[in-house]
Length: 133
Image (cartoon, rainbow, N blue to C red; front, side, top):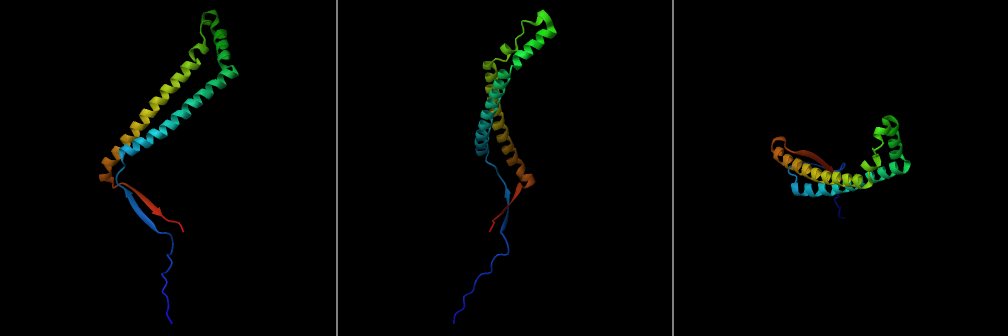
């Protein structure tokens, strides 16, 4: 009669402690660019929707009326609708989105490079990986 030996079942999930010793700045820049591009689209759509709601609800006309009531005849030449026209608002939103894309990508890349410089002093970030059964 032969007996078969079975390995003992592990007591729990395995854990591995790892340290992040380097972050690739190029990969960080590409990832930050894609995330900031998505955020820029959300920003432009949010500003577009806000402008449309304000225009449809008559806020710009009410603001002009309030300025005319307070200032009298001297302020009748002021028109908030001309200052906050659709083209100007969308142009500003696109300019703000482009600035956000460039700054977010550059800042994330700079942070990755600074992390790579300081990892020699700090040892890096500890990450614990475990597997579930």
